[in-house]
Amino acid sequence: MAYFHGRNDLKVLGVGVLAAAASLVAILAVLPVDSVCAENQGGHARTGVCTNRSHWVGVGNKPWMMMHTNIASSSSAEVKIGPATSGASNDVSSVSAASAISGCPQDIDSTAFTEGTVDDLTEHTYSVPAEGVGSFADCQITRTFGAPIQDIQVIIESGQADDIGYVGNTQVTDTKPMCAAIGEVTAPVDVTSQVTVNGNVATLTLRAQENCCCETGWGEATAPGRLNAKLHWIVALTPQPLTVTFSETKVVTGFTKPAAQSTLEKKLTAMVSPKSETNNITFESDFPERATVSVISRDATTGKVILGVKGVSRTPVSQENGDAELRAKKGDEILARANIVVVIPKKQTHDVGALIIKNICRRALPQSGQCVLLTLYQRDVTITFKDQFGDVLNIIYDGVVVGEKFNNPHPGDQVGMPALDDGDITEGGPLEDGVIIDPVATGVAHYPPQIVLVGSQEEADWLASPVRLSNELNGFVSADSEGGGGRPQSQAGS
Image (cartoon, rainbow, N blue to C red):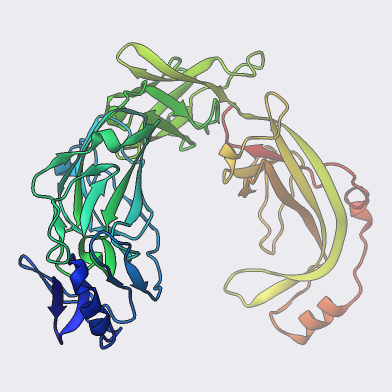
């Protein structure tokens, strides 16, 4: 018999008898190619437009004849599905509902699941142009977990296929009369036998068999309102051993005096696997008189713990790899260790730069608006600090201010230059990578001192005049080492 739809356009000429062959030829002569599909699918309207798509005609079990124009195939899809809340168990109640996954092939990234049992639902839809009654449109679904799969069960709970639905080689929908309606999952079907498992990856193929025309596939991609293929996954992941990994195996820290008030703290990371154990791990120093350990933060969703290690006393020179341990424990079991080394600034080397000579006008009293004419003699000294082991001081000391202790101080004068006593320490600059640039300078004034107004012509003339060399500064001018009489001193631990 023949099926006519919409504007009496021919959709499919189905099973007939040989006697109808002559009538068939006559009917084909008047049929438009751009027909519009509209079928009553048992309450689900088949509304996919067939314009410029395949139309299939056949008699009995003879091969179908085709009038066909290709359209673009579905694109691939990749989504992430994992636990929805911090520390949530891997069950369906803790998983965010995912929208339908469309396109082919479909890749599901569930590497966020690393332990326990995953029990959740996914929805799938795809559509490709029909290729003939009896042909299949396949869509491979691959799901990757964060741990090896120990056991798996997959059930298709519901869905509609255009026209007959399969998972692998298992038919999961009913078979409706040709072009009368599309196939539907009428009861859950266990399709575990059609799943391939390789380590932490599960793969299955969603299939649709054409039994009419136009579109082949599953769910809403074939026509709005159709049910997507809903898969129920129950996956037990292989239990993983409890491990803790430190970001560093040798933790170098330090301290400033007094040690009890020191703010120097070495930060490092500990990663806990499985993540569910994050809050059950303790951290300690086995030698608190050398260094202490504190937990700065924990994140059970990532298994990440930030630790702080503070020095209390210096590590002996004979123990270059440390004599204290950072330990990660669960109960009495030690899961990870890292050596702790406490360094202090112990030695220094000086690299004296070239001599700089220039005229300046040094401000006298701050509110006076006056300055004193001086000739400045300056050398920039690069001071490199080393620890007790002879290595450049660790960056843990970056930002620590280095002062200068004067062994041959300036006596001071009547124009605002402060007097320094032997042994005085003045504040210098902060360390960076164990190094500080120390400008060592002195100024020689006219005698008697000449004081002028700031911004005056006298100041301008002085700044532009040739510099004067003072016989009193021969030692400074020819200095090739420390220069200036200053000795840098750090307030770091010793």
